[in-house]
Each structure stands twice: as structure tokens, then as C-alpha cells.
Amino acid sequence: MAGGGRVTSAALRPLEEAGLMAAMGLEGLRGTWRIRSWWGEYLEQCWFLVSVTALPVFLISIPLGATISLQVGDLARQLGAQSATGSVIVVAIVQQVAPLATAVLIAGAGGSAISADMGSRRIRSELDAMEVMGVNPAFRLVTPRLWAATTVSVLLVSLVVLSGVSGGFVFNVLVQGVSPGAYIDGATQLLTLPDLWQSLFKAAVFGFMAATVACAKGMTCEIGPIGVGRAVNRAVVQTFVLVFAANFVISTVYVALVPQRL
Image (tube, rainbow, N blue to C red; front, side):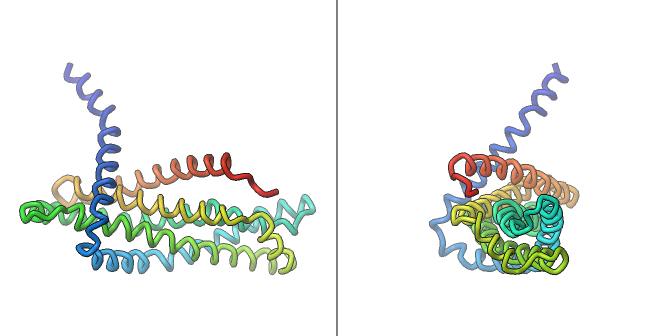
């Protein structure tokens, strides 16, 4: 019976964690209207996330654009359709690469820091002290981090798109010999305004998810430095899993609802 109980507990643990993260996100949203109490923390978290993600996003986006240009340009050259390289590169970066690259860095750099900060507050009993003083930790700490991660994710998408398209342009034009006019003209053929809205929506969802998971893991970690380290690791890994799953769902729904330009 004891063995069966352990198996049942292990099977239900993912559901418990999912419920905890959902409750954390909803509780953070519930404190949104108390904007005067978390506005300063929100600005501080926005600046912190920008400082740790802006340069890495820029450095990652350029090679990504160049890599996509290499693969697509070589295939297009074999098919005799090099003029279509620009459109394929831009659509791929806007629809998939930009939100995913932003989510990876928000979760890896920002989410790990948020989880470690929350875990440190927990082992120092700061969260308990806030509750004793009648302050809701979710309203004071979680809400500004949710909105900061969401805001910075949306803002970073434009940087990823600009850097990725520039990297693809340099590689495609200078290395593969495509004319600049053909690249730019092709870039505007397939891209539509809904593609941009989809990318921004994805980035907002991914940023919100990253902050939610990081806060939940940090605020419920085991007491001690080892518990904080494990919470950070689990937060990053689970965020990646959730982000790629959410990306598949959103992309599938988008393709089904929005006709793609040919």
C-alpha cells in the first residue's frame, strides 16, 4: 500500500505544480489594480530584465538570421528562386524565431534571477514576515514581475526581428550574391500585419509564463541553498517545456484562422 501511495503521489505531482503555477499567475493578475503599490518595483524589474537580456538577444539574433539565410539561400539557389529568400527569412524570424529567442533569454537570464530572488526571500522568511504585516506577497512581488517580464518580452521582439533580418541581409547579399533590392522586395511579399501581432502576442504570453513559473518555484522552494538552486533549475526547464508547447498551440491556431499569403 505504501508503494502504491508513492506512485499515486508522483503521478499527481505534475497536476499539483500546474495548479500552483496557475494560482500564482491568477493571484498576480488579481493585484494588477493596486498599481500604486507595485509601480516602482515594476520599473526596477523592467530595467533589470532589459540589462540582462538586451545584449544577448542582439548577439543571438544576428547568427540566427545568418543561419536561416544560409539554409534557405542554398535551397533557393538550387531551385532557382533566390529572390524569394528575403520573404522566407523575414517570415520565419517574425513568426517563430523572434518570440522563441526572446522567451529563451527571458526564462534563462530573467527567470532564473527571479526564481533565485524569490527563493532567497523565502529562506530568509521575508515572505512570512510580509504576511504577518498584512502584505500579500503576490501583490507586492509577483504582480510587478509578471508585468515586467511581459512588457520586456514584447519590446525585445522588435530587437530580435531587426537584428535577425539584418544578419540575414548581410549574409544573403554579401555572401550569396542576392541583390539588395530582391531581398528587400521579397521581405515584404509574404509578411502581413497579423504575423506581427501574432509575434507580439506570443512574446507577451511567453514572458508572462516565464515570470509565473519563476515566482511559483522560488516562493515554494525547499528551505536552504540547495532548495533555491533546485528551484532555479526546475523553473528554467519547465518554462522551456511550457513555452515550446504554447508556441505549437498558438501557431496551429493562427495557421488555421489566418489565411497565409502565397
